Image (cartoon, rainbow, N blue to C red):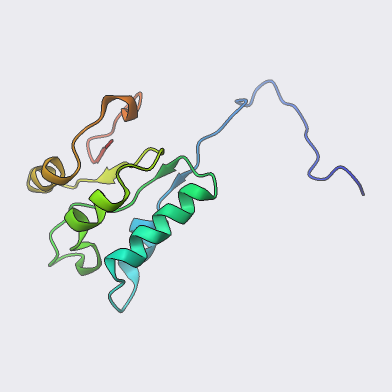
Length: 121
């Protein structure tokens, strides 16, 4: 078979989709051992280099609840200049305060309909 993958146009489907990659946050938060901040930053850089345009890099959550994400304020400055959308999970107002110090909101990254728990960076 040649020509795979085969394109089958469907006018009911959108012409494009956005993949919202959450492995850097959701995947790494479940690791048993600590992942160094620079390794996380390199992971996010490689996801961006692979062509992903929306990467959820971290969460501003209390380290008591998610120890793997305790380095959010250190990680974000290492990846914030990538040419991708970098939304973060902000579960409460206290987390929002930490986010505003290390990850100021940049208007070009604002989604059309932000949810209360996911704020664009």
